Amino acid sequence: MKETNRKSNLIVILGLVLFMSISYSCSKTEKSWTINVNIEVPGITRAYLYKASADRSDSLIDSTNVSQHKFSFHGLNGSDSLGVYFIKFSKGHGSGLTCFVNNGDEINIDILEGGKVVYSGNDIQSDYSRYLQAKQQEVALMQELMTRMDPKASKEELEAVRKWYTDKTNAINREKADIISKIKDPELNGYLALEEILISSTADKNKFELYANSLTDKGRETTYGKKVLEILQYFDAYDLLFNSVLMNYEELHKKYEELDKTDKKSKFGVEVYNKLAALEALNFGKVPPPLVARTLEGKEFNLKQVKAKIILLDFWASWCGPCRKENKHYVELYNRFKDKSFEIVSYSLDTDPDSWKKAVKEDGLHWINISNLKKQKDDNIIKSYQIDAVPSNIILKNGKVVGRNLFGYELDDFLNSNLK
Image 1 (cartoon, helix red, strand yellow):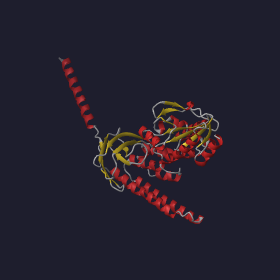
Image 2 (cartoon, one colour):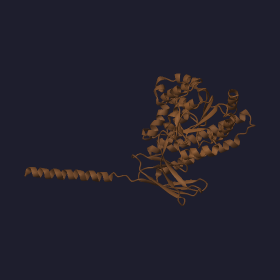
Image 3 (cartoon, helix red, strand yellow):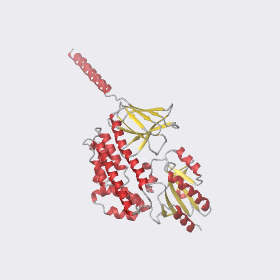
Image 4 (tube, one colour):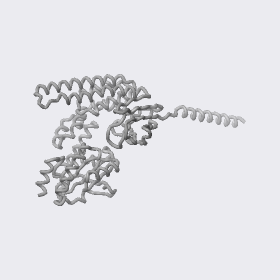
């Protein structure tokens, strides 16, 4: 009898535990967020949603049609942290709307004719809007700079304009940093501080320190805030990596050897080291790294297949305006030298096959066109050939590197002298 009672009590206890577990799980159920957009700009038929990350890469996660000037996105953040999303109106590169949402939020966005954007729905987006208003001053400042830059001005006058622009820029940076420092949400606080550093056109330590000081105590603990502090801690290595795009192997090697041991061991120092190894493999007289990719038709292509005396390896993308302009010059050169042991191999950084194919057809690129249709951070070809910007090119002669980034008359002169 006692054994029966013990079993009954055990069943009751297990039932209560199960009930409590179910109740707890239900109470923890997270509501999805919603972004509703009303767009009055004509001609927009489709919208794309990208998820942002601390390394500035973004992933396409959804798309939808624009119907009667309206569309919506729904989702659920993978954790309790703030979700950062971009809404774009064409796939791939280009600017878009930035949205900050927590689970359960409903954000409403009105995009008015003329480009004005009005957000409502949470305090986080309101804080971001205040930051954007301060940032908008940079556009007006650049426009005013253009009007003040007189090509006939004296050296003293130009110096005065430079000082005026620097002082104004510093004032705007202080205002933005002050706004960021007052943002209560730690994720947004860290995100904006990091964003200001990563979009900077120069590696300016004073400016970086200004935004590092705008981090709140909790903002410093976010993924974004930690990255800000990491950049400042290993600033010399970051600075070298930032400027490495302008350096050849010899220049970069010399600067790398001047770094102290801690900077060399940092993430940025390791990236510089890897870049050096790749650049060494692309030095004059070297056989370039393997290059295997897919053609427009989906067939495998290997650079070893090309037997021309001179090969122009072209790195470009459909979304790159300067690349499309350079294509016109390449077409002219190809028609002039294609019967003189000259070949062009164009490697596209596109991830969307339709955009790639459309651009090839529009530009009349009647040579070898290949791509792996991968994001740049995931593309081993881009890494091994050290493509930091497009357009870029590498010139091979008899299978070995003889030039890099020759454009315009320099490229014309090289081909004329080597393909007589």
